[in-house]
Image 1 (cartoon, chains in turn orange, blue):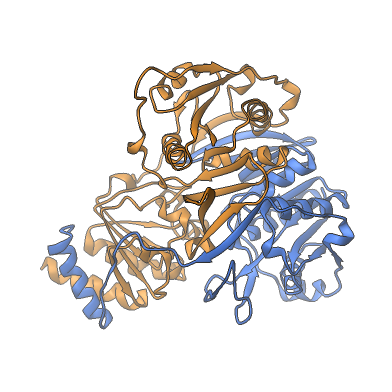
Image 2: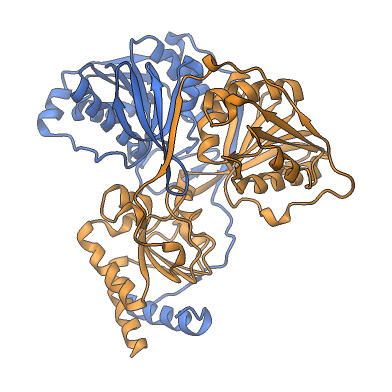
Length: 328
Length: 254
């Protein structure tokens, strides 16, 4: 099986999840006696291609063009379609990033193919690849297979594979093959303008050793004071899942998850958070995770070290009191 | 500006899910409008209020989906299109997008809006696929829309707190990021007015779409745990006391 991995960079800097996807490719190649080709796409990204060539891949395909300097979905689709038609891979892998979400389904469709996105693992069942992804906000897993002919398109979720398992090349360096693509300015219909960050946030949750996070279970903004009292008793920062910030109950800078901050504190106390994938990717690296939720099937318990199945409105005051007692 | 907004009906957030093969048992549970789509609908209504035109709510699924279209009409959409399909849940993302594309192609519209992803399948591909199949420019994860002369200026969310401005000609397809606006509730007046609004019903057959699925959900199941969770039981007070003990002496984080 020939596997093509489309790596991701922005302004010459890696999106590090690219290396996780290379690990996924190496593992699938090992399970299917396949080979891995890594694609580096952009402008002036030769150094990145050299870096990938130190890894255990059969070849690196370097796609450079002036019109690929800044990402646009149109240019990426036109260029990668040509690469796929020439390289004829069986499987095309992507890291599941915001950028990949923006173009990969269209790229696959332009070749008449489907994509299984946001996968967390794979299995080789007698030569047939089964991809595992989450559904219903992480409440269920699903086994998904391709029904049509290759090439097949798959993206893997951040954290699904460990980048530190990436194998180096054992002897000699794989070739870096420049692939030229035909692109015209008229192919590109959207015009990317400046990149920016919103006003610098006053809190840096990534530096907080203890975090108390609230989710939908908090129900109303007036209830947040209870969680804040608990956070104060613990000496923790308060944070939230996306819906709470979308409602404006806490500022966006307190949001944990794929669109917010990624944290790995000593303690993460999740109150009334169900554990949707978008939230979990932002906190699953925490050393100790405690979840309080009245639904014992909430996916947050899959990653929790300690769990309390109860109403948070009963647990919050009790826990605040116990913490104050413990501190004397 | 004429806008088609795609809204999906999904199981209610707190619905207990019973697994049945490669889908869930749909009897006994409630359904609601997919939350990310409520932001797309709200954005469509705001654009209409500012720039005129009409908003068409488009949804696919069995008869119950009409309720979600009615909700959109009650909030201010002008008319609805229901693609009646009892087997919608079994379609792959490309198949769904092909059916939606055929329905959109029957309308004159300047803008197609979708939510970020659905809370059931969670494929998150529909908007981008519609753009590909309709051969229209697109942008995703949109946090702000400004209408300029015949084109849009858009604020797109990237990862880790980054954003980007971009310009996009019309007509176009946009996937809206959740949180872009504060969604309205339907008013009693809106609910009454919705009763007079039209919901056109079409089918895959009437649209002339035949689909060759590219992928299949073999089965769904409760995920296997990666961590062993120690559950602390008793009254809330007892559980809280046990937790403080654990955090102090076992995890040593306080």
